[in-house]
Image 1 (cartoon, rainbow, N blue to C red):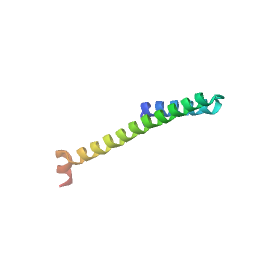
Image 2: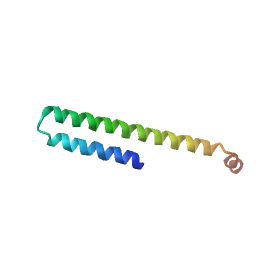
Image 3: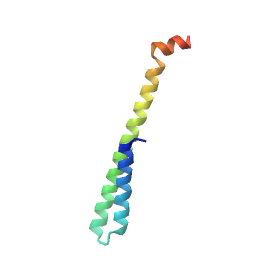
Image 4: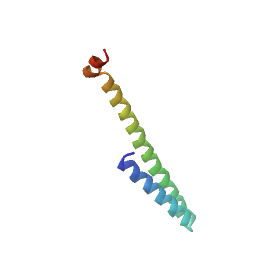
Length: 71
């Protein structure tokens, strides 16, 4: 997990806590929407990291050095 996704998850948790403490409905809703947005951003970063790792592994498997040692 990257520092960016950790940051986003921390902000989501903070907004969730703030929503639970809010006494006004519109403030609670605003914090809940913010928490959802932070979670979406964290998920997007995580999916990007997974895709990048997968592509790097596929590329490494098809490099000439890997082919020579395999054959």
